[in-house]
Image (cartoon, rainbow, N blue to C red):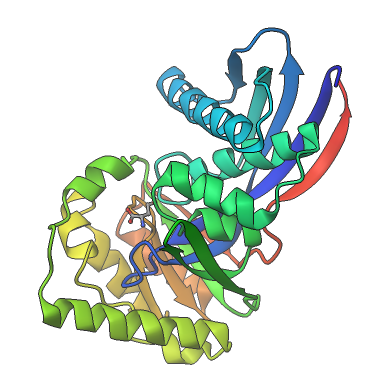
Length: 301
Ligand code: HSE
């Protein structure tokens, strides 16, 4: 195998889309690249333009993903240098962890010629993430509806038109997903469960059929956002400002900290309106990625 390097490009993603907790996902045109190269020994060295604390966390994630890959395919583990680069910020609810895990698995799959299918990547990465809603769009691109079914993961994916603009407000602070999950109640009332089911089903139908205007007013959620709001107090103000400027609606991206509004009109005005409530944040107007993870390079170092 020498010092062959495989580079994989993986899109960032938003998940939940409001009521579709742990189920709905949408790949965005914001990319990370993950390069994997075999080195001597059995350890993993992660090189990335991150703070030392984030780099160490990412290195641990990459190590877990590599171990799981080797165990799954029955390959003897080897040492790896992994380079993580790109545009997906850490701890902002935009699927950075999924880009790394998918990149490691897809890169090792190519490097070892193990021949795992995308479905197998999905099952492997979902096992590491604990939920499939960022792994699915990172792997397949587009809008995804996914669920763990027994020991498998079922994912249906749909192309999303560039007409739909994804306006992302990225705060300067990170939110830790595990901590944000601990804020959630163990049970919810039937009324809350039914509201979320109704909305998530309607969002799925609207996005799957390209009827984007039917998304208006559909992002209400009673399962996670009300409990996470204290981590990002401007959440509702940002969403309401986006809606007043013409957005179809908005939601916390994954477990945060980013806030997203979807719109088919006035994207610039929506972005400006959202930004006004958190001027220290970054704002990006994106469209959906419909490609998912791709190997973009393979060569000797
Ligand atoms: N569905 C997960 C959550 C996504 O909301 O906790 C985390 O990125």
